[in-house]
Length: 191
Image (cartoon, rainbow, N blue to C red):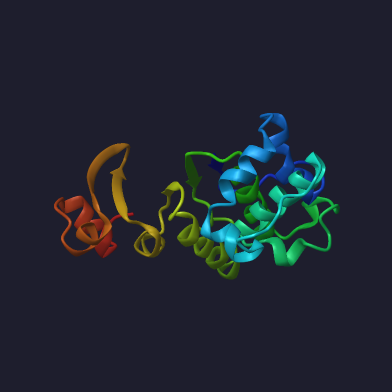
């Protein structure tokens, strides 16, 4: 799944933005629900004994709710799911884009400067969701924000001018980078 710098909500409702992925990929919603019902996040908000609904439409609604919760957006939009997604703030649009990415159950999420267009509060919300999601998904975050890399990364791949300079577990990279360019970047001497 790909999460770009600037979110691009589809010209449809909030609900339909999230439902779009499962629909276009013809995912078997009941199979996806069976799989995600085993996750801690699902059990936390849904309860361990939640029964699935009786129709495909109701199952899809449950799936949309799950991904909006997982992206940290549900509480803000639950009363306006059928309103245009374009009416959301940019930070909300980015979390909606995250919900849309999650709805296709990707193995890997590539987030390209996912908070560069966001205000600090929205960026913090997106980062908080990444901290939750990285327990379940492989997330590759491309960022120029060193503080963000320190907060989020388990592993660092440092590239400079298109060259791979160094790759290390994050703690090692920030404590004792092996390459002089890495050290200069961490010190703020190059950007």
